[in-house]
Image (cartoon, rainbow, N blue to C red; front, side, top):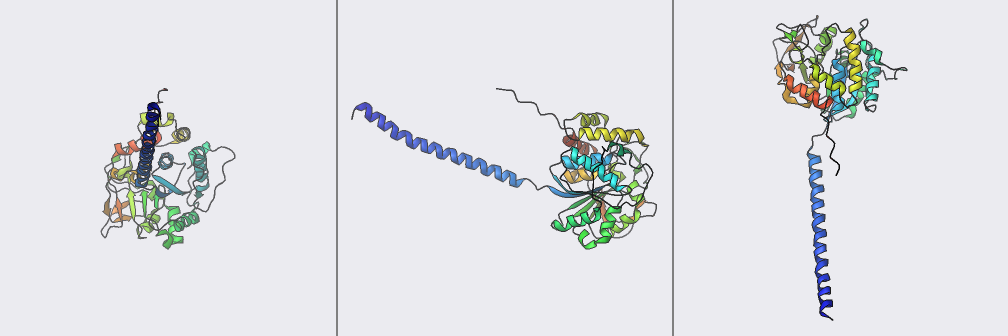
Length: 346
């Protein structure tokens, strides 16, 4: 063997072990990376299962609240139901919103058509023809959803008069008790409606949702299900005009529907043209619990819809104040996200 051949063969023998070690090291790095990625994924909190019951189509806050639910990966909508009045038209509006925003797979059903008001659904003009077909078994759908889900896991967001919720409670109280909690927008404890959006009076008011169905709230408070109330005290949050403009101009699937619904609402609104985000607050509370600190209260309900603090053991908790800036940041992050700059081409 020549000296050059010896060196060549010796070099090859040294290269092979080094290449093997490099391959093993690369495999170890890849395995570690995969393990860390899996651990990070496992550490993420599971989405919160929710049922949303609302009176979409009257005030504009339902549109913002439902859009926030749909745009938030932290929430998993199991069902959307409609309540009070023309629940069929309300459900058709929601069906169109779900379709247009890529959420047509979210189950939807109209609740019982209890209570009517002339011209109550001013946003019905947004419906295209033919209007979507929707189920009308909202109470049965709500109860069936609770039966399928593990007990104590589902939060019910009650954002309108409680007629559909009350019908489900009366039909099957045992299944209704499988709820983890009800977070509702309604009532007025110490402060009421103010003279303009985002303001409160110094005295309580008969809040709209409770005024239309006072007995339904009494029934819910007596049910034994955990109830958290977001009253006027904590839900008078005006949508700032600059943020509204960014939401309507954002490159999201919610921009065009919300802009169109807002225009119809603003034409008819007796409350001015600045949206008040009443129904957004219960959603925000789920997404960021620190936006308010609920206190235990014994709430009584009068026939005129007034909610008062009475004597007795607490039957609910209520937020009497709220971090308005924190709520608006959640809305901005979900519905007017900052544009991601394009990466420079190499």
